[in-house]
Length: 137
Image (cartoon, rainbow, N blue to C red; front, side, top):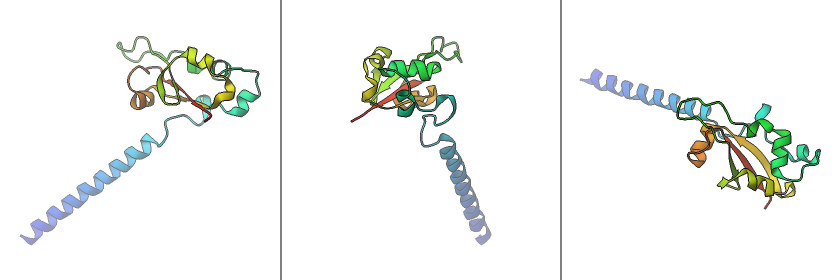
């Protein structure tokens, strides 16, 4: 009987260890932040827009990261018209027109969130990703 108890404890410990490893890998692969920090989806920095003559956030995105505004190719038949959404200070109902109304001097940061991350954070309707704008407080 003693060996059966030890065997069960070892099995439980092994299962717990496996779950901890799988959970750790999932956390690492999910990452802490979902905005890109390098490459073509890197945040638009104040230094970048100050080096241009842009007046508003829409101009900054159009000039410095025009690919953010383009629709991504559909991945499924249900994703026939991918939408690139706009989020200003956490409000996911913003539009491109709102970007054009936002003076660049009011902007602290502009970043891009990929479609899956935008959907997780803000809900459906971001099949092409989201342009995230944080204004100066």
